[in-house]
Image (cartoon, rainbow, N blue to C red; front, side, top):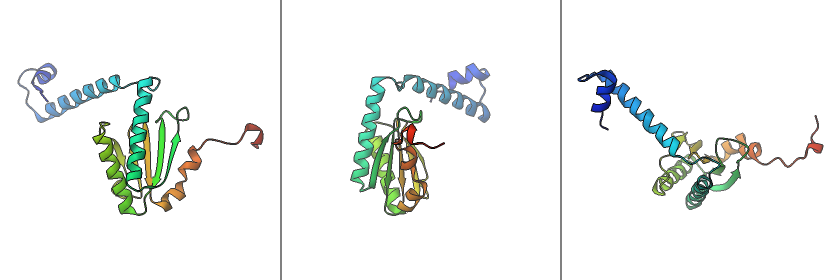
Length: 165
């Protein structure tokens, strides 16, 4: 990253302090991040929906290749602004959950979808992978049963007449 022009602009010519370099790098990184966000298709854009579907297909194929169990795909468009799809899967053990998550991250990167945000990989009880358009949860079976995300996000099949207040 070339900082000399930015350093001259922000601090005057010749400033070489470490604090100045950190400030400039953060400023440039923030500018680059904003430019990327502006170039990203909006959720109402048909091209954006096509990308979400491609990511979903990559996720499902990777989970199947990794022998993940009980794979459930939920369409959460209109229910949440977080993502378009949520995928929930199980691994047989800590090691299997970790391996499934690593395989999925590699498949997403190799398919050109970039680096996804990951939480819980070190403990491997519940790994969350956020691709932006698709959120993937990989659980050990006991943890999945305890949290029961499918029940929370599944479509409500009751009608208003059946609901007691």
